[in-house]
Length: 219
Ligand code: DC
Image (cartoon, rainbow, N blue to C red; front, side, top):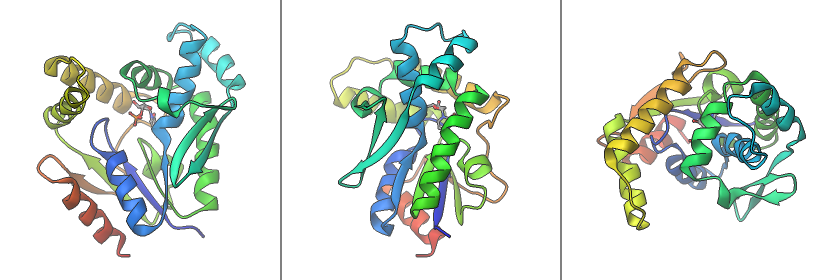
């Protein structure tokens, strides 16, 4: 049986930064499931499909082939043969991913891929439903969170460092809206698994969080 670490939590809690660092230290592959939802969202946006048109989205997703490969240990998302990783980290794609991710057909397709990856290699996987649905048998489950104020400030600093104009209040509103959607959908909503350990990173440095998770892994 492979070794699995599940990390769930709301947008901007630092899941991917932390999971990447833990993966490196513990020699695990890192699986970022949000990027898979983002790849399907990009496909839907490119087809100019109305995000409220469920039927069209399901139809489009049947034609979208999403796969993952690793280049120097870094996850690359391939959509119908194209490496789309550089296109996925925008607010537009993130919001569209949050809107299409409640659709059961969309989730079923990606969960198959996620479980296959976890069965093949020891991994740390992050998302919203990893501990509750995708990998209920993960040996370690973490629920990573931080206040919406701290998460908005981190995002603001990230954008400001890139020289992008941004409004802190608007970022916080978007984050809270996304939290609401991710937590209140019918299929696999974001919630802490009963056997997950909650880690609130609001007042922790990245190094402290990584250390805490490695200690929880006991490796
Ligand atoms: O983690 P992220 O911001 O890249 O994820 C984008 C959206 O995808 C998120 O708002 C909800 C959805 N998602 C999901 O429903 N289940 C997952 N396991 C991962 C992401």
